[in-house]
Length: 191
Image (cartoon, rainbow, N blue to C red; front, top):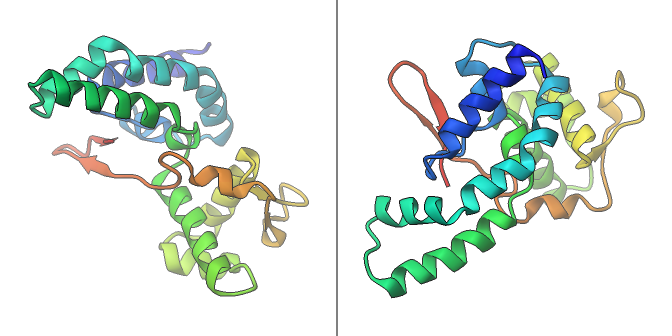
């Protein structure tokens, strides 16, 4: 693992240990001043997925969450513990892999598909999400790499389509996110 990957992993482990921060790989990369590298994000997500789940499902982390949100009775704590483990267990690696804009791109495609027979063009997605064409194309590539979309070739993202099993990405967190931005532009997700 290179130095950048070690720094990203260290930051993620520290944030996830709080039990209340679901910092994504792109957020960690940005905080560390690294460029958005799709391949590096992909490798990190593959490496970190199991660790992410085990960190958030650990008994001491569940207890920290109980304390942080003020659950004091054994009954309330047991209810959260069961719900928390089920919820965290259903989170796909897309939750830590994708940028907020990539999640918005996916949501826009799904919304458009629901109400029209055709999928939106890259220009329509870019206008709706507020991204440039290059960033939109990059998002389509990442969503294809993830298995949500299919593209004929890496350089031909305009002819994308939804995969047959694209619905599985709606389980757990799906393409939802809640990003907190602190003073100093520190960003992280919360459950």
